[in-house]
Length: 179
Image (cartoon, rainbow, N blue to C red; front, side, top):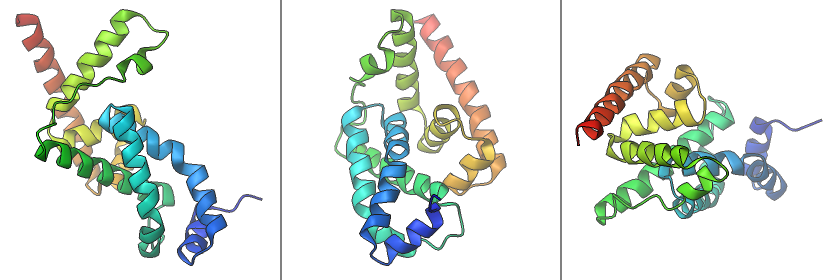
């Protein structure tokens, strides 16, 4: 029988290396995927995932089990992605190109790659809360309620951000059409 995340987290927080390893193996792909979708670059996603994994041993001591482990881990990952984004913005590298679009578009038509590139450019132009919400709802397929739990906001805030996102994407498309 599989040991649940809550039990593994409790054991890992008490120093059980096997439990810690099991948690990492179970959730690394999710951490990396969220980081990649947030950053749009493989290198940044690897950095974020590594930061999350390294800090997890310490952070597990503060995990109280009030939220599902996976929700708690999403929060840590989003915060790590946010921190990296802030560091990059502070150092003047906010508008780095998304070199890994080729990986995303592998095997797909050039039009799809163009659309993905456009979407990442648009995401880069959005305010941070809207971008985080878009990554969780659109890329991770979370419900508004789940995203609200991860972001620690009301569900109505997530719904409002998604409404705002649609309006902003439409405005970006209209700007591009006029250019």
